Image 1 (tube, rainbow, N blue to C red):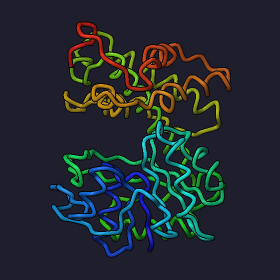
Image 2 (cartoon, rainbow, N blue to C red):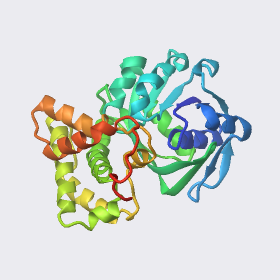
Image 3 (tube, rainbow, N blue to C red):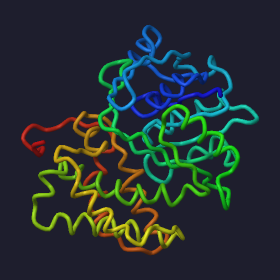
Length: 318
């Protein structure tokens, strides 16, 4: 399979490297020092889960040099969609499938606006990886799970193209789960992630210190409940035991766990505020659901959507 990775960072690069190691023809869209390191040494992965290895494939900042792909995996941060998604065009052929693994529930629509709904699949991924240095991705933990499927086409079972991609991923040691409809999986992750990102980002703290605060768990679960209410108002079916599962998950997180939004915020990068709490607020308004906690988190974080200078003495400790 010819695969192109749009967003060859910690998530896209990792999955692309596993697919390349399995023998697929993988092309990486990257830039800067990361691109130069991939060209010089391959994309290196450090991982106790899958072993340390280097994946070699074509890499360029200009996708027009890479040719058409059978599968394009979109893994750029959502705040880069405006500049990144037009780069899809040279990668698209008549039979190309585009799989977005972006955070939130808006990505499929934004990708489809460029590539066409008929090409687009969506998936929720569960993984802990980071770029340790240019050209090097480090994985912590065991998770490398992708739940994916159709998002615009109703299906009673995974479609042939979803099954084909699922098989390729499983052969590459990716824990893939093909589903007929990706929307419940996207929303199940979104319910937790938008709340977690909003709370840790607003507090500038990892989960451990927050969990110690009286009443925090109730607030976190109430925020999740607001998002779940929006999902159900949009016709999304969520598990009946979702609250209990979320509580167990939050209680089990390592104390040092930070959301990717908080990591970006503390690194002076843009943050996914519009695709996480912002999306909740906009969708809630559209379906008439009240989301006071998520609206507050969105209001607090919205000024930090783009990088800003941090004024000494006013930021919270981390």
